Amino acid sequence: MTDDKLTKDRGGYDRFLLLAVLLLLGIGLVMVYSASSVVAAKRFGSDTYFFERQAAYALAAILLLICCRYVPYTFYMTMAYPLLGAALVLLVVLYVPGIGHEVGGAKRWLRFFGVSFQPSEFARLALIVYLAYSMTKKREKIKEFSIGFLPHAILFVCFTTMIVLQPDFGMAVIIALIVWTMLFLGGVRLCYLLPVLAAMAPIAYYVLIHAGYRLNRLASFLDPWQHQSDAGYQVVHSLMAFGSGGIFGAGIGNGYQKLFYLPEPHTDFIFSVIGEELGLVGVCFVTGLYVIILWRGIVIAMRARDLFATFLAAGLTISLGLQVCINQAVALGLLPTKGLTLPFASYGGTSLVVNAVAVGILMNISARQPVLHEKYFNVARKTAEPLLT
Image (cartoon, rainbow, N blue to C red):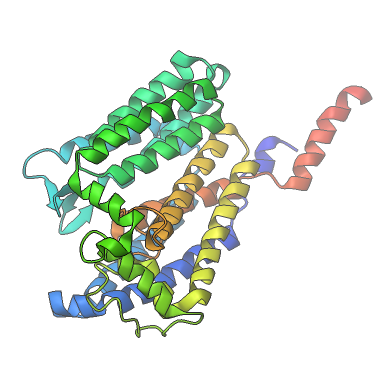
């Protein structure tokens, strides 16, 4: 029995992973409508404005997930450089006058045919694919400074600089954590990685003090109630939403904080609306679905057939995990406010589509894993052959 037979696409889907994603999409659609209906009616004259767009995004996400499920993950090895180049071009295009779309003082979006697209989300996916490919290719020399560390560090600086200038400091931090963790898992020496953390501290401090709104966010994080009328407004009302939800919640549609108290409740603070309307039970259920996704991602990475698949699955899982943890921590006042969506639940097309692609890739890696008992039989056979001849 050959390795190809053991590792060919076995068909089907990772049931736990797929079920968790579909449940989150369903819950997200319901909560987006509940959180946005009043705001949508006032702004656009239709209480289903955001719901209809989110439903279209969800359908596109499911179709892309299915497509990526059947694209062999090895295809992304050949696409590592094109994806990286496309991400770099999109980030540069943001700064071309008349092309980048500015909202709230931040130029983070490109608009095509009335649909906004956030290049930094695509850049995050492209970097994960490239790092998985690069670390696999350089595996034998990954511990060398000029091969395993320096090229990746230069690339990271280029991407994060363009993202910080948008400005989007939070996304830059997330990408930094993804890159650092992947390099650590890939075998880059800690004597190279640890000084990077120390060097980033003064850079982060400089970026922080040169933006007044970031200082205000930090102050509101340390004492939100002292700043509840300005910088701490979102956090205070988010905490009030969780507090009023109790064990079982106020019921879907019966939340109070979404009524023009909690800003943009259908995007960054959808978790707060879930806490108020579904209560602790709903919060635990939704969090449990994310735990299932992360659990399956870790298992898929550990059982992957080759290093590229392992690094790719690990990077995608880390990315999803960070996005979930940061969004929930912000909503609970455990981290300073950061505009970051909750995967598969918050309103927003770019994040939803990119995360669906990530899950589709994970499913393809899962489907091509060896069947364990056959794998061990094959190993035993190869071991025994020299003894029998």
